[in-house]
Amino acid sequence: MIELAREVRRSYALVERNFNLIKRYIGWEIVFLVYTVVNTLTIAFIGVNPATGGGGDRVLYLVVGALLWGFLSVLFHEVAESVQWERWEGTIEYSFMAPMKRLSYLGGVCLFAATYGAVRTVVVMLAVVSLFKLDLGNANLGAALVVLLLSSLSFIGVGLMAAVLPLLSPEKGSQAAHILEAAILLVSGVYYDVSVLPGWLQPLSRLSPATYTLRAARAALLRNASLRDIGGDLVLLLAIGVVLIPLGLRVFNWGELHAMRTGKLKRSG
Amino acid sequence: METALECIGARKVFYVKKEARPKTKPSAEWGASPGEGGANGSGGDAALPGAIAGRPAKAGAGEHGSADIPSNGGAGGRANGSANGPPNGRFRGRSAFSRAMATLFPRSVPVQAVSGVTFNVRRGEIFGILGPNGSGKSTLIRLISTLLLPDEGEIRVFGHDVVRERFAVRRLINRVSVEAAFFKKLSAMENLSYAARLYDVDIREARKTAISILKRLGLGESKVYEPLEDLSRGMQQKVAVARALLTSPVLLLLDEPTTGLDPVSKREVQDYVLEVREGHDTTVILTTHDMQEADRLCDRVAVIDQGRFVALDTPAHLKADLARDGEAATLEDVFFALTGKALKESHPGEGD
Image (spheres, rainbow over the protein chains, first blue to last red):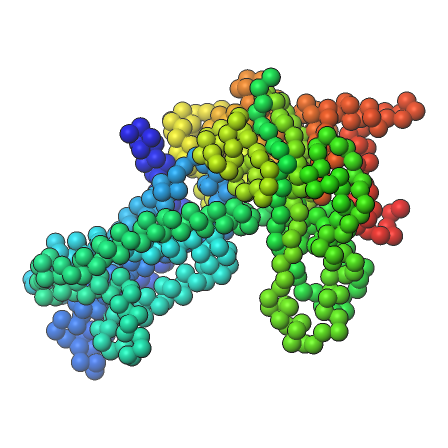
């Protein structure tokens, strides 16, 4: 129990450090946040544009996609880039030399990512709500929250798998993580239904947890679907998380050992 | 006396990508400058002796040369066989296609960074490791720090194996690297708080201790809250020393801790290292290029060259061994005597 409390405190080191970094990079944080707000508004305007057959639930459909993708991509990014960021700063050796279980290290990274992503998403949502009359009268917000929670688990799992890439190849690993993120964006139906994808891409959409997240969240927010209605997607999201998180940790440990064998933890010296 | 560190036949080999060089590169340029060894482009890389740096490798005293054999000799086998000519030699006579392929997919060649090193460090000792750039000092420190896995041999810190009992070892050690590795946007205090939390040191106590250590090292409290990127390299290095000491390590690994410090700061750090050893029962392993520093601080020093220990003794004995005809020798004389041959070999025709 005492050891668990210690590990939790060690995890908090990562959360505090990253929020301190946000304070120090506050100018860039504001710029990125403004860009995300504007980007989401632009997407919402496409929904009301009569030239593209706008109106009805289209705004909410697109806004749900933009907000969820905003949250999930931040989650993925923060987890997947955690190692790369430390390599770039040159601190990875120091952090990895600390007497801290890797689970606690990654737990801290994930906790920060989820908190940071949630705060950003709320700010963007407030901006959208202030400009558009979104009809949430038919929305099951509780079910949407459950979707968000379970999808966080599955995206943390995907992020952990991607986080190992910079340990295997410092330069190419980060590039591969970006390509993976782009592929998830393309096939998951963030702004469109996956049925519009070419036939050869549609099987890939079934591999992405974002597909089930978006489908379930839209059902809850646009059609007042209950937890029972979206139960299938929830089970899938939970299963992806349950499989990918331990697998991601295992792969991460393996990647760390590989880096220790090949000397890839160091940046210089 | 209790043994703080046992290193038995530790060996580490890296596989580095052999760089493609222009075909017409003059052969005079292929030799790296003395001890630079940065074949993978990172410059001053840890321990890249041998042919990669354009430096013929010595066979030394066998694969597992003992630290107790202060020998630089041995029949000169050449590592990887590529020291027979300039690195660009492999491209001569090849087609543009094969040259392009070799550039795109460079061959990896093995480089012995640490080659069968054996030594013990006693509890409370300050043990120095001297060697030219790229001789294997930092690699050895990383092996002890659990940041690298040895290919062969065993390293134990207070009886704990650095591979099998990494976690236990990590509780006992801390390290100051030659590069002050910090989140440079964060202040010294924010970085130190992060370190304290990682090591589960009480945060309030840690902040007080940090300020007191930094004051002792000559860094005023006002600097503690400034982003580290605004502090000089010397000041950053003092923060790195404070960070390591904050966690009360019983084995402190100092990898060129005073490189880049002005003479006053250097002396402050050296004094503090002595103070820590006396006051906190800390064992120190120190790598340095500063022979005066080694002479002043170290109880024993090992000289490492091309991954092998070529001497290990007290500074006084090493100097006495070299002194001739009543002429006293310095530790610098010892260093050049033990590693000078390698310097000459890396620059054929120069400075004979």
